[in-house]
Amino acid sequence: MFSLIFLITLAQMVMAGTVTYNWDITWVMANPDGAMMRPVIGINGQWPCPAINANVGDRVLVNVNNRLGNESTSLHFHGLFQQGSDTMDGPSGVTQCPIPPGSKFTYDFQIDQPGTYWYHSHNKGQYPDGLRGPLVVHDPASPYKNQYSEEIVITLSDWYHDQMPSLLNTYLSVAKNPDGAEPIPKSALINDSQNVKFHLTPGKTYLVRIISIAAFASHFVHFDKHPMKIVEIDGVYTEPQDADTILVTAAQRYSVLIQAHNNTQENFAFLSSMNPEMFDSVPPGLNLNVSGFLVYDDKKALPSTPLSLPTFNAYDDFGLVPQDHQALLGPVDHTVTLNADFTTINGSNRATMNERTYLEQKVPTLYTALSVGSDAQNPLVYGPNSNAFVVKSNEVVEIVLNNLDTGAHPFHLHGHQVQVVARSGAGAGTYDGKSGSFPKVPMRRDTYLVNKNGYAVVRYKADNPDKFSACIITDDRKLTNTTRVSVPLSYRMARRSRPYGNVH
Image (cartoon, rainbow, N blue to C red; front, side, top):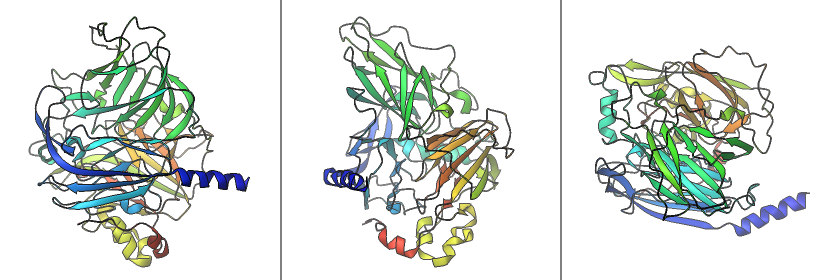
């Protein structure tokens, strides 16, 4: 058995390659919803931004040249564990300093996990201005590799006409925004456009990778007369699950199998509809929907009536079963309770965790962990507004997330996929500590939804040093409250990790 595992590992190493991307980050003009031309952040003078494609085991090099002129930047590769490459994770002020205008940085990491991911700026509120794109890790050993003929990548997003610095300043100001309402998007996009077409061949089965690159809105997704079979969420293969409609929160990903019809008699629409539950109000004239088309015959007309549904009965992802059947983690060694809410602090609208808001540190948190010796075990060294919790290596950590807000919110843990062992409905209040009904094989993903005035309980094993949880609440770290759940590296481990990257 050992020799077989060794041979498989050796074969993967031999087959692995290096994928290199040379990117100039620049301003570009675009009008994706047809309503307003505006500056967006593109790559190599183009927008939408290109996809990153790699195979399991590949080394990825992304050479970034910040040519924006007026803004710093960084890149986060959402959902990748970055095991042994902590400094490549990307959040400014957390694992690196931002890349200043006129400077370069090389991201260098190996990908050992298959699935559907995305990359985006992780510097202030920048990525809704356009710096975001798909990241797909192809898997020659996928359990579903023989069940489809082709792949389709679909991104979902919300779109704003104003640039993020202006939107954030208005949001944070109590004088301009006394109710603390998050900015409402102007439209919804599919593949950073509208009315996109995907050509299907009769009889073929397609793996459709659905990626939310949204800033704020969750999206209901429905394909007319084409049922879905869910086979992956956030890089986790699942037992196949039929679904008519799914709800995709900001930063979540689904892979679904769709069977094409056996004839070309008709073309069909599919729908992405923003969920207005998180909006304080729905402005008059806002179209929550955006359509795309499954085209069997270009000579035939597209559906003339926009696809709409009276209600959305989305499949509850809590019921998904990971294909590897990872058992419920336990016993719990460390419990962290987080109460998420919004409030006003010193005349500024802020998100809070346990009544603390996040303030970006002058020294990135990872650099602090690597430079203070044994004091890395002391949460105080990371600053009071980092809201740090330090856990020990290989502990089973349980996070209780109580959402005290009147809107549902997604949350994300860097460097881990978490077991979602409990999730309440809306209005259930805070978690009461009872655990009698946890599933034996919990759903697992890296970004999960917590319903309004409700809670979620998640578990993970702290086996990836110096990774941090980040709540995705809305468009900026000034709004978004980031809480550190960190396993400090020893200096010996730090020396084995990749260097801080090349900023020059």
